[in-house]
Image (cartoon, rainbow, N blue to C red; front, side):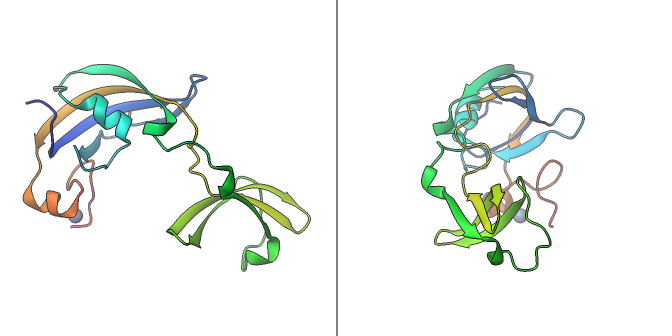
Length: 161
Ligand code: ZN
């Protein structure tokens, strides 16, 4: 069976940045499971998986445009510390969920100076070329319920029912 539209794919991956630092890996854990062709994973990785079979192992380098996008400087803004109601101490590196015009957005604190907090609304991996080492471990057809929900049920997927 080859990877194509609406197959459930299980894979092991190790993600490194351009410096070779490991950012994330499924090794030592259960494989990642996703439904092919539904935007569950970044487009550059999904594209590289099309047509692969169980046992295939390969490397792919995904540019920002096909991963988490290029950085947008307009998403960096300075807000007063008073907007962090109920937060004891605001420190660089902290992440918060904030409401924006586009719905909930994850923001990262870049800097704190006096009463001013610099926030970055870019995805933490925006602007990064991501290198994946991938091994396909299982391919099967998605069930009707999985296609309806848009995600995998069972091992490696959602466990909400
Ligand atoms: Zn579900």
